[in-house]
Length: 611
Image (cartoon, rainbow, N blue to C red; front, side, top):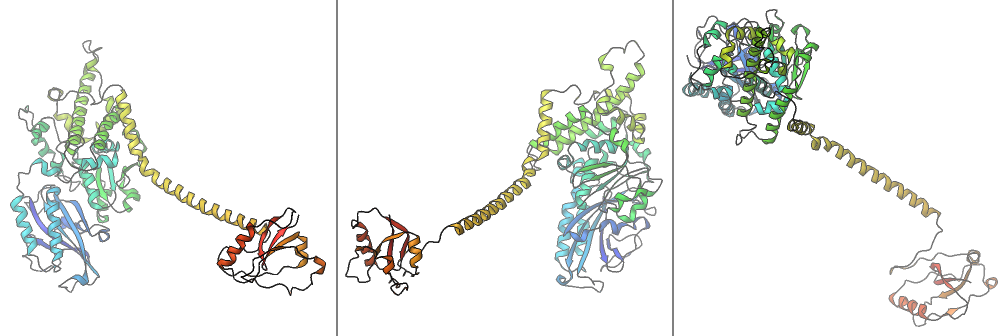
């Protein structure tokens, strides 16, 4: 049997919901298909359609889902957990070239699924995306030849001897550290404690990737997920047979891990791991036989269901961890050594740039994986060393020897005690001896010891970067700019209002002819002129040949009461302006001091103030 088991098509039916419409090779007992139709699936896979088409998949043009299926009792070729990856897309009905009778909605939504015996999602994802896009691009779902060719191509290229790098493809430790920062180590400790954890977020592919990235932190765990499909599965005997008690003389890392009792048997009987869990599988979480689980969901109902007995909720969008049991918060609190160690990791990721390019080793996924492998190996060695110290603490030989001190305190005393109660620890502890572990890994936390100035500087640099001052100040800058603009407009309006009121309080002035426009005569009464102290005027003659001369104003009593002498002044011309200029340059005819009136020209006369 090869690694690739089936290529399956899941469609959304208007009456039945998600259904399996195609399988290649056909399921046992079924004939090969030429058209899409509803298929009967094994009872153990009855929820396959809901896993392939997750909740809210219609909101995105393309999304991927990772999920696990339990083995089928009636099939000898399916003896352990199967790993599925689906790519779902949708197309408008009006764009289809061929429409079948079951197409009754405005859009058609389908997913192509690849079932494999190993979790090699990174190897399958890109090729699955290309084939799905090509099949939808045909706009004719009755053409299924491309799906059969896809299966043959995968079987020819994916062999049973899968390299370790293939399991790590698709995971991203850099993104995990960027999102959760110091809480990555909290998640790792949660994994070791076998608690009930729910990952909540969207999109589904990101949700699944975070979980698989977390699994990759434990050396060799991605190759030991054969019992994750159901809480009833347990391959402890297989795990024990895979371990080796003979010293590893080869340079193969996997052989070395087996020698040290790795990977830890975290998912055994009673444990469940489902990267994406639909609402139809909630009964597994409520089953009393399920003692621990790690699942991912996009449905908020899981967050409020008390029957699930959830211990921790991990929200992937903001990168937060919510403890529903208060005691867990203290057990999983990071020690000073833990924080110093995480400071180094976070700084390496921050300084390596914002891209995932592997041009530099520091901050890359390989660097991060090596650091976490070191942490776990020293943790195991320190626990075994503490057992030796406990056994010899009453002897005189061990008294006062610094190398015999308990080194587990740097990992958290309460955490060590809680971990020692888990099945994965007890199985590992029964298998590995102190002498075996001490030959390879020295005990002690990677950052044991006191604080140094470099640690303080690193901590401050990471905290300042986490604050994202530049990004957080953008809304403040925008608010300040809007406030300044609004204040400037209001101040301008107030100034205009005050200026208008000020102008209303000023005495009215006649128009100043500053252009070549004709002047408008506004008659003035005799009483007003006398009251304002008018004495001398310059008359502007309408006769262009006569230059204007200064004269005295007659006695006011001799002036008639009517305004018959008033006349509208003619339009001002260039010549009249020149006459006025020459007139102003002539000496005054009277010796009395006089000043020009501010009232300008009125009725063809320039009024002067009388002294």
